[in-house]
Length: 476
Image (cartoon, rainbow, N blue to C red; front, side, top):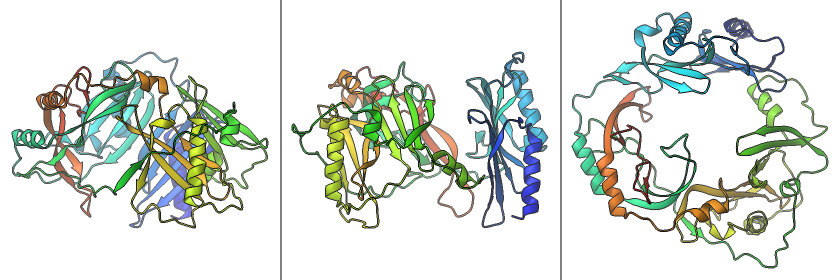
């Protein structure tokens, strides 16, 4: 990409939205693809980086993405109704893509915090194409908050025949099986009254998508066989382990030469970032790599639970070196000692995940990572909850730790016996099961194309059925 074109794209970006004078450029990146296509990315932000404007353009200067994060944007403006917001949305779309609404159709809106999102989709068979069209967020004063444009795609071929939903349901019924598990549910993602752990039945094949035109149903995505793995219980908790009250800094390994450079409220957690006091960026670099180096280079990041005050996770981005050459077994003993120190209450609920050929050591690696599966006192697995410890082979120190997203009191309150049986859960699932058509990108194709699929959903909410509550039988 020539310097002249880069300068033109920068001028184009600045002309799209007014950049406040106190904003500074953080990213100015130009990316060229193999086939001549390209993209320009710009980011401006205030000194605290809690306000910013991001703009992406294609190589022709067309706007593809816009994000405006301002704390007081249009705060004094009068409230607009949904129809007026939609008018502002369409005016903005047409100002950048005058012919867009000939190919794109208003599909739906969604209420967001402080804005409404409007979707304009490319419709085929009354179904939107995946990763096509655009969406735009409008605030109460008609201001643009977010805009993403993915374009108009080649119209896919429509299948001549479709398989019957009845056959799909029958196929699922014959192959359906459930696992009793504990899941951490969130109101933002699931139809539940409150966040927390719940004893549930999970369908083993919960990601149900089938090609719409094949009489014998088959998954649209063929997964490779899982790498064989076993679960090994760690050694019993050592009674000789000396436990003392350690500070957050002691646990993570923060030294006196380091200082806090950021502290962010993350809701239930506090994010803290440390770096050496004398650290300086060698030269101003507005590339993406330069931005991430400024943000994360040579830092240590941690998340602290507000409820318990304990470290939930941390990561060293500052490489530490030493003279040791620890084996994987020696690193494992370090990891075990660390877990017994930082998490004695849930240590007994861990099992090391051992994958095939994991014993083959890579001498070039400076870290050994250990991942642990979690279960409760009755052996019921806790879904998607993994504990990870990475030990530095040269120093024997822990460079990365990630603990569970809940505390042990929550786990102890979860029932250990289901009220409904697996058979009853299966009947509930089938009685609520339906399928709907969707266009998915065909990633198996070398060219950009689409495939029509049936995706499983709840017949009432039209959302995927993720779990059956093992206590109440409710569909989640």
